[in-house]
Length: 121
Length: 107
Image (cartoon, rainbow over all chains, first blue to last red; front, side, top):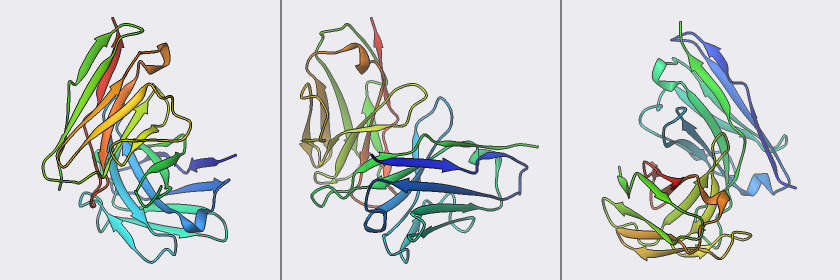
């Protein structure tokens, strides 16, 4: 059974830092591209970042570039998102998603339940 | 960035109805288009990938079509669990972008 579980969310002050974790099981984690997607409650989905299976090709949305860092530990089947210099507009539910690359097509097939990050003083 | 525009933003329908949601990309994305359903308080769920391929385990009442810039998602006979929000997403190039969502409500 596939399981994807995010953790690490919470309340942080503007300018602060937070590290999100995403623990995966039930699929070949090291073979999957992994993504972070966020969603302001009641609003739409926004792609944040992705990283390849080897962990050496991260990509970021412009809105987080230079502030967020995506990494992974394949030995632990865990994805991370280090978030620095947090702003109020970073407040959202953060989802981790596994990209199954189905038949050569990028597909966000495995999702976690999300973790809420609230940036407020 | 590639902009994805869905229409309508909301839709009222009844169980058993056939509904169609459209998605337009601001530039050609070939068939790199996915559809997701999101129920309240839950993570999105992949329905259709590569514009028209049905994800494993997804009921056959869901279908997708299109290529280039114009795409559609059709639900042939609405079931109670289909009242949710639907998103298209382009995976042609990063930053991957989603449509703004279509909320499907019970009439």
